Length: 300
Length: 240
Ligand SMILES: Nc1ncnc2c1ncn2[C@@H]1O[C@H](COP(=O)(O)OP(=O)(O)O)[C@@H](O)[C@H]1O
Ligand SMILES: [Mg+2]
Image (tube, rainbow over all chains, first blue to last red; front, side, top):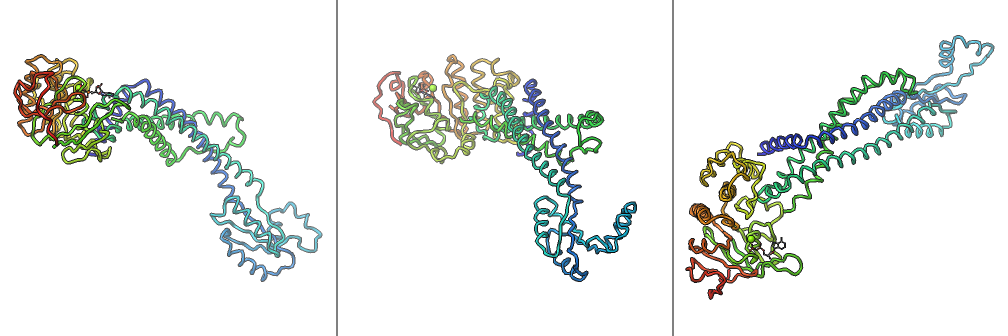
């Protein structure tokens, strides 16, 4: 019986879309563009996030040891560092290793060391962050903690870059919530409106259904599928528009010197998961939009 | 089957449509509700299938207390009550056949049964040759038959008909009453509201007479004398 009802609802949903062809098309196109705007935003966001993720992952904290700390003492400190959850790896770089590294990496700058009798480079720990520490707050907490150790002289990490990037991401995310919220409300409103027209046109029929023993859910069913189908069609349209933009418009945009940091960076499209989310969101909004319209007519 | 005790119904703050109705209709009875226009017949019928709720008093239908019925249960009550509405309430965009099928679909009849049952009931009311017509292309009597077919297609325990002979000429009205009688003979409890006294006289059934929202008489198979329109009857209304 459930299957029978569902197939009836879907049939009726399509029928009333066909019946209100003009309004349905207007609604679907509007929803398509609204979701496209949101999808474009998601593309920008997910790409920025991917880029910053890469950078954060590479963030390495270097802690320099004070002079005169023996290798054994350094080993002790290393063990203590290990106990921090934020720290995934600690590599001790002794003064000699530091010097070796410097001379091999900067052969052309070897003259800087000429004439020095003593090795000027401090020993250090190269600290790799664990997964959960790859965000700004955790990094800063860790850096502050390390700063308090008397054996350490200074702590370094790619502060400025990560800081501003992470702030940028945060703002972007907030914008996304606002944008998504506004577009969502708009979409629900559009669907509620078109479904309301159908409901209104058939209100006598609904009253009859109620009087001959239809449950409210049975009466609502076709309208809910109508809204659902509109939402889904709008979502599919938006994905089509986004794909078109991604393949035909973005390359041109990137080629022209227009956008600063996206230039020449390979941008990826939305993941399949994201696309599925967009469709689910479209259908859900369609469902709630029509639920809003149909409820008021079922008082008999 | 239907038991009302002291039903009161107000429309608005100071108009009382029903002023304390008590009655009892047994399973398998055929009952007329008569009275002048505006007496409250339609309102009384609407109480039975919950289109209107009583302000006071209690109604039991098929063992269910309607004042305690949850909104969600109303559809299931209605599936046991066939209603022939005064204005038919057929769906004009659907053919006769589809109107019946639709009524079956609405209550969750298995798809395989729907067509057969629609056929059967349309044959019973003598409309097998009109199944593809649309309601507005039918005569008043034919529309009434479709309305009856839809009301009984689910074999309800109770059939309610509001002015089923309202706009029909005498011959057609008699045919319709014959149909209702047939349905009654099959075991259905039938309640008919009408102000057509000629019909009431011929049918010789129990008659409940309303006037101004009150039950003024309740008589079994009365003779013509008692039923003269406008006459003040001496028969006391039975209680309960
Ligand atoms: N929905 C309503 N709102 C207000 N008044 C109503 C409504 N329905 C019926 N009435 C009034 O209640 C009285 C009884 O109506 P009704 O039950 O239709 O009588 P009958 O069917 O015997 O002609 C009438 O005076 C009518 O005007
Ligand atoms: Mg009436």
